[in-house]
Image 1 (cartoon, rainbow, N blue to C red):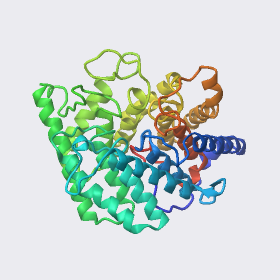
Image 2 (cartoon, one colour; image 1 turned 45 degrees about the horizontal axis):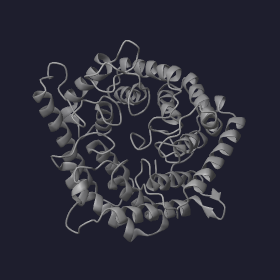
Image 3 (cartoon, rainbow, N blue to C red; image 1 turned 90 degrees about the horizontal axis):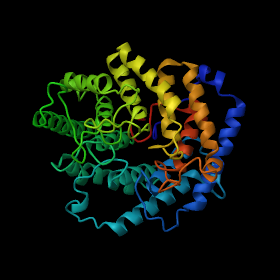
Image 4 (cartoon, rainbow, N blue to C red; image 1 turned 135 degrees about the vertical axis):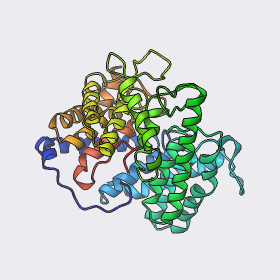
Length: 420
């Protein structure tokens, strides 16, 4: 998604719904929202967050995405690539000021963190991408080497957990991300991917036996000591990630599928949602990180891999449920906001070409265009990092861009998760 040049793909069904008026409104909103982000967090600001999730690395990736989709796009005197480069330089400077990297190892505070979204690996992956596009191949290769050497140790550490934001699933995403640069030998990447997958499976088997749940599921993972279900920290995120590597997962596929069926069909509550944690009855959260929206991507991917209609049927049910209940108050971010809750609609639309789901997405996009009014009225809460990609306005820009540039890229999925 981020690297490969692709010919335009004309989706005639899409354009029966997505009109010129839609395009004008959304483009105006995208430009206005980008200007607001640049005003609130300019690349030379003292903003303290450097990661992809809430920091300047995420903003760098956002403007890199915009540059790839529209190289002529400018904001004042600067094009989007220049802004992406400035943001990643800021992120790197901030990170190095907060953490001292020893030459021969990892900082002790990070030795168990290896996710794309919330660890230094995502920072270095985005840096490798941006520097590659600015022509600084030496720096790009240096960051790739860090990911492949120093941080592989983090992914294989016994202290490392398996979830998406900080854990091994996030490291697997990072490897897919950097593989598109075509600067690393395929056999080395494949070996590293297989090693990390083996660690995830072994930990899942070991934990299932320890907690005596093998009668329900062959794989069982904990985060912070709890069996989380959703995409950010739990089963859904791990399983969806594993399904993106069918060749390396072939010998484990029976265990993976049985675990998927347990989560999708045995853990759903009567109201149509999933619990945050398996051991809890509460299930009020309806967002990417916890609840039905994040589960939808697992159902979609399971359908793609196993070709069984029950998965697609469930994915459509989840998208309908999310449409009815997903207009949450937490703003327009990707992780727990309106933009993130719209991605199940795009994923199901891509599988079915049912215009209903595209209509859902456009309705949620309209809400994103009204973020300022709704925030001022108190209809939206103000996130902790209101301009970031995963908590704030950057998520709205990302979602709107996916709609605006639909014909220029084959839509794959949720950013930082299953979009490569």
